[in-house]
Length: 467
Image 1 (tube, rainbow, N blue to C red):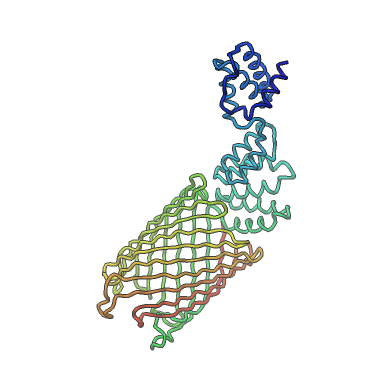
Image 2: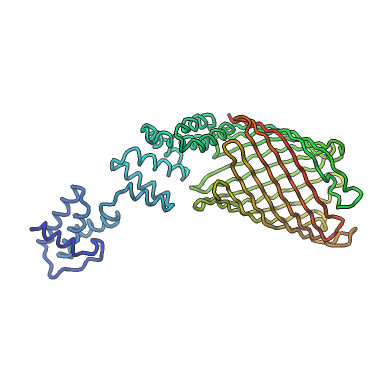
């Protein structure tokens, strides 16, 4: 009889978790019978029946604290009988990665097995919880149906830890799945050029249409020259992608004929990369030294900070730096403090990534008429061309206003710069890349003699290896 009463009560109730109202005069005896049914159902795992029975008991005896506490606990845990694996899928589809991971963990505890382990491992990786993700992905790897996808994510975990060679092997293994082959091949190439120690070297040659930045139609507008450049750099990250790092690099850029514009550079930096959940953070100190035609030209100290956060499929990032610049000789008036910041939103467009940015800067030179404020938008596009080639394009405009009148030109400068760049890359091997580049600038000014055009095509090779 109590079962029939219980079914009737359950059917009549819109929701077991709705506010409880007394059902006539208190009946502690009937309430005790309902409570006994609820506790038995709860012990058998039947949360729906338990919730309805606890509610019926509370309605018949408002003083039944045990029934009210049992009902409150079931309602706080969510809808009775909910499948945690299905709930995890729903949450993952809604972009609620953290709650999805918790649901998949509950599904594993309920016996969902390797499928739940795979999805929880992917969620833990997305949350930056690599230590938790690794054993879950290893568990999923044991099942043939999940093996390649698990290895792909194990490779991503290894790549973030700076274990480039291990990541490359895992990505290679993941290519056995045709649906993952293209992505895994690209990641394997990337992993072979990544690691806790990354070394690179490059050489290029090209042509500069206007070395002296002469205005069109002037006597120096024909100062074009060939150029060649070589450089090398090293990056050491003892704890992988998260933690401290050191970077050192040097380069030489030489003119074929106009040796007065030969430039040499030496740069060093120390910084720290961190993650706070899905947010990535970076702080860096850098020092740069330049020579021009073999003579000291510039010594600069820079502090830089950046942050990035995913927003669905897009990534919002911001970067800012302050640089203390000390020029030598005749260039000393340009010394001062340069500060610049930029915010960027990058998002996928088909196979490509499009970035839209806006930046602003302030150069507080020691001499007022050389100080300026600048701002403007920029767009960039990254497009893969098959598995071995890539194309990158960038375009921007910047508006610059100077603080004071130039004492010689008797005018306060206002400049506009139109910039564009194009870079194509073709992988000749796992570590060797051919590069074809083009840079262009159109400089407009309120002082016509300071306007100029510049075009610089280049071709080169770059070698990069990770250890």
